[in-house]
Length: 327
Length: 282
Image 1 (cartoon, rainbow over the protein chains, first blue to last red):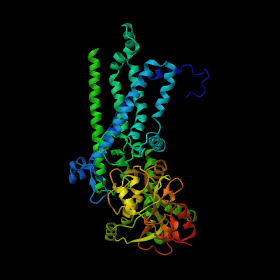
Image 2: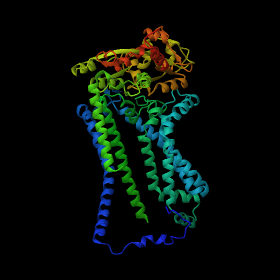
Image 3: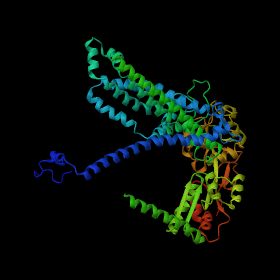
């Protein structure tokens, strides 16, 4: 900033802030008042814009989904598993899509939560500080890899590997998508859970050790319960990442619109709501039944994530209250 | 950017747009812009044609949009484009709409495209009938054993329902019958190719340009997929690709030159380079 920093001719740099007149003229006074008010309004406006965007998304999707619900009713979408939107007559049974989303999300969580939490515990309490400083940024870097790159990995490496080693007929299936989604969710879970565990504080750990607890007892009975609200937040954020992800599931899940039979067979292809919208929105004629139906699926997805979000908020606030009460 | 400059820029842009539209309307066949919209399949041909035209007509403003055959038809009906590229013929509904709006769609078949049914090279099956292919995609045939092959479940792969290739396959091979729920969908020719290349029991369909040694193209109804059989239309899963214009373009106009470019030597080279088959055979 200063043009010649090594010159000693400006010794009172630190005192610059004190050079202001203490007494303001009425004009200056007004100017300052206006600046404060306008600044506040400007920031309020910006905040409102982001709020409005959320509201508008809701309004827009509801508006475009409404014609479908009005002509076909929600029962048509939730009452059948036959998804043939371009056939004649068209069938809009979305249950298999809903199930597909649930399958991959649940599968991803089953893999990512244990790995993520154990890794977070390891990073926060066991490994040395220097290694943690080195490892954590690398893990966070994983979150920055674009999802289409994960998708290529799923199709070109995971799928052939599954066919060869696990002798599955098809490598693009619910399991493949779950594993890739888990890999994508793990950095989120580790990063947030590690922050929460670290924030639980040294005094808590030292108190536990002072009472004679071992490190394992301290971790399981003191640190994890103290940080559980942050851990839940980490899991929910990982879940959000998995349920909203589109590109990876579109490439890795096989996109067969059906519920696996038998239901536990996750080595069959499935199709999620997000992949359906992404894959089919391209060529639907605007205003057609198919178009509105895709918006109806989007609306369902929105309601779904919104409910999840509300539940997580409720859960988090209860966790905070519990922790506050036990102090 | 200050508010005033911004206003001036916007105003300038508006004036430019008005002038552009006005000049288009006035200049008639000397117009210096060409709007092309439609199929993702035909798009690459139009793109390559456009490249040549931009070299010979440097002042030309030429845009090629690739959103889908349906969008191309809609754009032509609304007079939003000069040429609609389509990988299928216009539907009756679209024709009716066009005529109601005073647009007379004229088709120019510029190239032939073949949908090749491919399997893994290790698969002993070399030929199928369209009937057998249809049964596979309907989920009635589920194991290669039923067709005289190895005891392996068939992994059925289709392009996504919004692609032109799907539409052609659905019409020519499926006779518009529904595919089974267990059919997997991929969203591009390279992906379909990659899936078949790596999956022993897979069957899929791709454009002729994607037929290589890594996958095996099946003989369908006794006809091998190839340049000659597709150009002549003998191969059952072949289709013409179209440019649609509003009426036959005025002779000597840019639109006319563009729509007949496929007849020139250069045009044929381009079509071949893009993996399609020229309709002309010099």
